[in-house]
Length: 485
Ligand SMILES: Cc1ncc(COP(=O)(O)O)c(C=O)c1O
Image 1 (cartoon, rainbow, N blue to C red):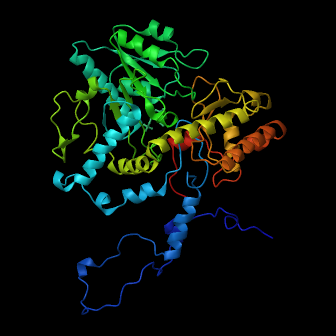
Image 2 (image 1 turned 45 degrees about the horizontal axis):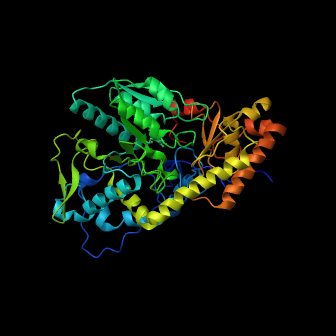
Image 3 (image 1 turned 135 degrees about the horizontal axis):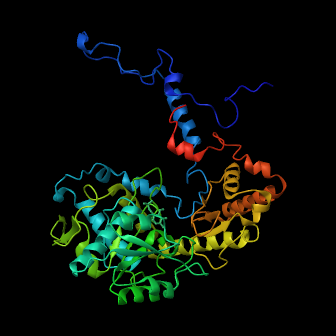
């Protein structure tokens, strides 16, 4: 039978709504007129906007089909390392769309905003409890903005002590946004190499640390998925020379209820609510990157801050040493509500369990895939594990080929070519929300791909074969996106 292009299989070709429109179709019916007829004002007549005429079913199918071309945590496993793409429970959405929250406005007076202010106040307390810090701000709109906020706080702290410093130490296993945020604040990032175990050595920090260094930015667990086991010794060295310790806590999903960041010597850390605390992540936002600090940095937190005065919540600007505002109004409140709902529904024991399962799942994948894929750091991992394409090199199969083929098996690709310390990196973060069966299926798929790499490498070079769009020139797609058709 002759196949008619684009009309068979799961993926349909989908024209633009303008191409689908047929004169005279409508998707609504007006109720019968129950008032007197009046002639339409001549000024309101005309050709009208160029909108297509469509029926309800045309519109519904159009958007459902487009949504099926996408991949999401609701459609399958999304093991994108460093992004913690865990499933977001629907109750979080329900809480955020309650009319009291959804219809509140940032310009409403404080007495009419007590509910949302209370939520923000309590949210700050939960985050300080989870991290072991003393105070927090919810204002930053993303992890990277939390980093910039942290750097501005470092700067203000040093200035208040009469000596501005100009450099920040950044390990080679830090997240890429760390050095960028430090430079945006005017600091010069100084690279510190990790040791053979993939972590910072106190010796390397000792050599790099001097009186001109404002502090160190440590991603912990780091981007190799390894816990920075020398963090306390590193913090002591930095503190001894007057510096401060920044922790990129966006990987907190591995250590909730397990590591107390304050006891590890951290002065300030940021969190990614859109990673660890189960609010949607991706598509450019909105996100939320709260910053938690120890007591000595609290005076510098952004304003306004939510305070509780005699049982009433208020927004206060009365913090003279504050770095000022970093976001319009108070940050992305909708994201905070979702994460608040998540924290309450999990409770302390649930959050700890989530971290334990996130680590267990990553360790299970690491143990099952080592030998099939090259494992550059064969050590106990935290919430993610990093492989490379070294064992597939003889078949001229690369990391890109492997993960594109994984799409044909129904999985979102892991993060690739990052962290930079591992050439051809494949960074897998399953998260705690995947079941044993789905993880086993993922492992089986990766093993099948490794066999294909050996026996039929063209299948990988050609992948993905089953998606709406085949392999793109990703650079050209980013530089010259075609946004229609
Ligand atoms: C470890 C780490 N730090 C910082 C960031 C930056 O966060 P954002 O993308 O919200 O700016 C990310 C992003 O996922 C991350 O994984």
